[in-house]
Length: 121
Image 1 (cartoon, rainbow, N blue to C red):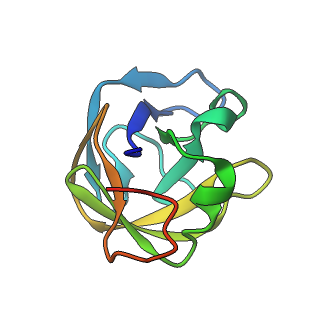
Image 2 (cartoon, one colour):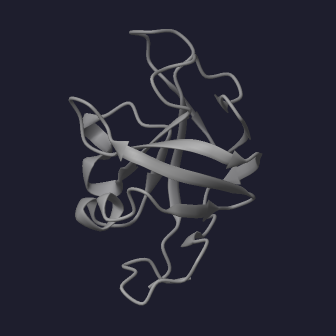
């Protein structure tokens, strides 16, 4: 099964509702129109999406997503480095390695194939 982006959100104002998007430009500092936070991006598994304010929701299990801490993933046009678990909520934080655009339905895949990868390209 191919892992894909199922939701894209920005949160321009702290404490206010987010904006749901079909696509977004992702810059080195994070998503265009998003306020700057602890990390450039916050990714979360689809099962945890309702309880977070994550930027990108992907259709993978939470355990599988956490297994990529320290690895790089291609998400549409962008490449992210998964830097660690999010604090006080589900998901992982990521830095932007390669800027570009991300769209709903984009494939999420490891940059370097791993034989133990839970994500299939």
